[in-house]
Image 1: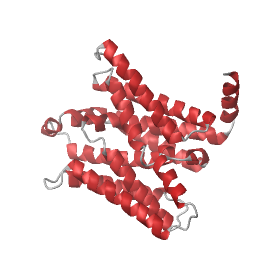
Image 2: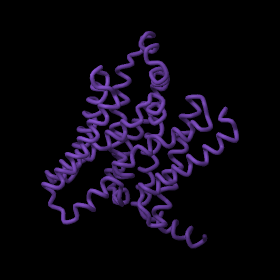
Image 3: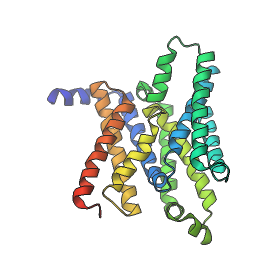
Image 4: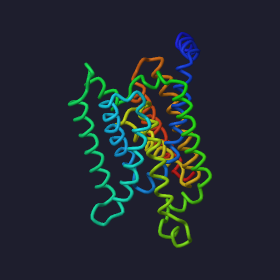
Length: 283
């Protein structure tokens, strides 16, 4: 135990480890806050769909040898979020069908482009790292840390400032519209914010595991708490703690960062499910 703690303290002396912890915690906080709204609106898989779009955008950036792919990935993912929202509102294409179409199409095209145009000698490794996360969270530059921090803080600030409007749109969109709330505008804003979170989380857990950051903290909190405010606060705490523990365990044990964070989230879900069963889930 003492040896593990000493090893951890030694790792924490390196700036790149501290950067990873800061970015990981902020991303997890942003994702868990929005996750409650997505789960309650039964639109959880939008995160999964947009993560596949981000993978396709990263493949395009790789084809053009872009050294900084975040602007392109962010622009494409935000555009896809808006398209998903607009397409899902049409009678001919339901929301879940729109997510499936864009998700599968982006994933397939991205992998196809990487196969045709890739100059890498380790294509399978590059694809695996992009899909499931890699050590890129430990190689962040200071400028990237500041960008992630600024975007994460902006997401949290928007959620807090417009909390009442988000609450209204989440539970009864028709009533919200009747009372003068511009529900369509807030839905659009939520879609854009989710796209930003997806792009930020790509380096943390990979494109296939991003949904875990969004969904698990929310459903874990719902096992015990019932009010929207309590679930939101608990979800944020669970998301941050799980991300922090996951990154620390990954650093000490040498396990994949993304998979370790998801494993910790699964453990938290089991614990909260048991706690909810014993407490009656009425907190």
